[in-house]
Image: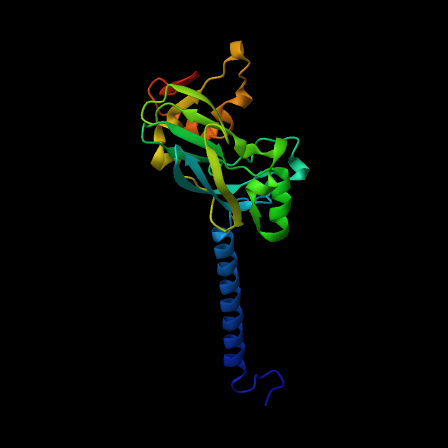
Length: 239
């Protein structure tokens, strides 16, 4: 027998081994792709990251009636290595606000973003009681907004927790779900609106609902209108 001749059965075993390794590689790649797809956005993004991806549930009391809202909020931001050049490039479009539509068609908008103290507590345990953690100047949820009509928004005004409404409970729990809210279902015309500031009354951009309903999300709707304008210009005012 030649010294280079393969032993009987050696070649089939070699083929079977290669097929097994190939199959194992394919399964591994498929698992990696699936892992990336089901992970929250920005989990593997080269420029964006986050420390909170949470289901935020908020129960509020208005006129003696308790209403509930649930969003999935993510505090997405640029990674440190590119933060100077991409400081605003990772903002999350969904899950930044709870909306409650009232019987008179007005809408209460409550920010869902967590304060810094809540983000730290969340990172440690994956759960945080927002009300007990975000207090004083860190209580972002206390600065909310009313809009006069969900159907045809014309005016907006500030709303204060404990005065115009009361937050009964607000919690954040870790989730793998993608950022989401129910604005499109409850008050879709808010996404077709621009909320104006009023410098004559010292109402700047940072004091308006523009800060909690993402502009680019609304711009995607605006740009498809024939005149390229917002359908509703919502002014600051009492109602």
